[in-house]
Image (tube, rainbow, N blue to C red; front, side, top):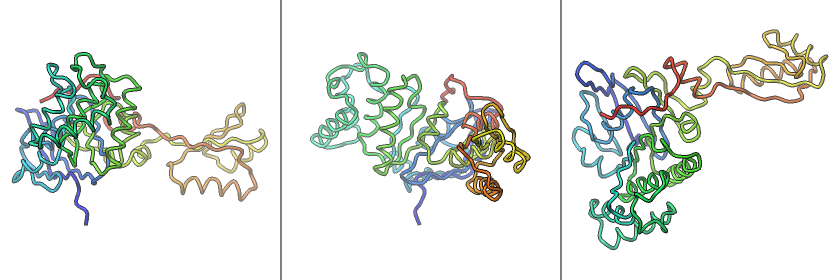
Length: 316
């Protein structure tokens, strides 16, 4: 039996009379990306802070990389890395010196630490900037250095709290590639993000946090199928074939000008086969077919009542 890389049961946290986490349960499989979504102030950062041992929960149990939060927080700290919303680099040190500092904090032998720093500078394309201070770096370079510092300790689990906020599209995609590479090498990623396309691209599983509770969990496709609006778009060669198809599928909506038929569906393969088999049984040929499903923004709106916003969540 493979144990979860991260597991929480009944996790609770309040600040005064404000309930931030109200008994959440979650499991994160090893070597996967788990994304936690939620409105601003929903408690995403609080969850990250608890799971990474920075904040003590009011109740519940947590295990990370096989270590229990209550009895072995040091074991968790040894196994994890954390990249927060705000860059943790030291602007008075060069990029290289920032990595050396992290190596010293991890008590790595000098030769091992220097070698690991050199490897990370090369991996993150920071060799030319290694001798410069981060004040000269672009936003994308600072985030890459921040993540490189997290990797000095060779963590098994990495918490990324909105790692691409404020980055330009090219830098975001570079960060995505780095995350995919980490997971391919067996690292587990716990990701919070305001960018739903980021979760869609990266996450193996997604959880939506709202009002202190997890209101949904699943893969991106599973969550999308929960929201009405999925449909098949069938195109036909002429109006006559279109009309025959519309008669066979009475719940559909025809578009004479585009020669298409919109057919509501739950997005499943079974539903797709059912529709095509009904048309094939009546010898009605389909010229083209596309499947349209709601995106994660539609899911988020349906579950929380509003769309994501660019403002950062309050860090407790």
